[in-house]
Image (cartoon, rainbow over all chains, first blue to last red; front, side, top):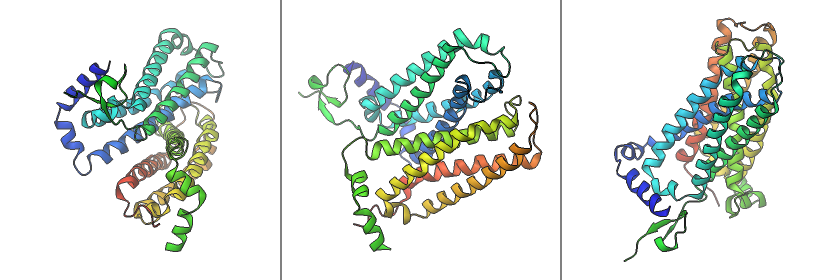
Length: 184
Length: 166
């Protein structure tokens, strides 16, 4: 895994155009601001939908509220794009950062959760009207969604706190949480 | 002013948030500030988007149900924001961007109150009700103000002139 991480870092470093922009005076601050705007769009729409599944604002039909979900997807896309720009610029600071590794894990759980929701539950839910109570499975999806996105935010904010230092490749462990170097 | 900044910066809370190596000091307080931001600005945006005509079948009167959660986000941020200010008073108070951010927060709250008391209170219970143009302009103003709060907040990390006085 550590060798794979080194390969990823090397590949990301080979793309220079992104880091040239990011190292310009306003590159990093602009992308960070967009990242936080996207975060708010995602949380605002998806958490509202999750809360409806949990029984909030029951007089709103689930399908009616679902019309806001594309805005959450838009926020997500903003964040994946700006997130990729951070990653291309400082791959060492992310690929070996335990906070980033946890962040990706939580994002993967969020993805599986969304997959479960649309493949198993939403087909029936979208036909229900105002006042309908969501089944227990949908409530579970909502709780997972709320917790996982909050965890993603926390991991994102902990990135700077868990910046990886340098280490020798042979001490790096299975998943490297430090920047490995091969010493001759 | 300097005496005041030094007094705050030497207080136990300020020193703890700034210097504690614990993840539960500065990093978690900053995380709370970001989570609160998502709920406050995000749910505000959800209401604004509904007023602008997206999700038309959500009855506007029901949009008010998100306010308790939105306010929880606000108070989480007011509280965590004060703690962050106590940790780095010089950094914030000597930066014009900080006053711009607070002004936008204040204006955002005013616009939000107007929206809640006028558009959301007068709205029909029916789905597919759309407020008049003035309501849409208020919603747009609300979106822009909270986006300005987020952007200026983010820029505080880049525009400060002095980190601490002590």
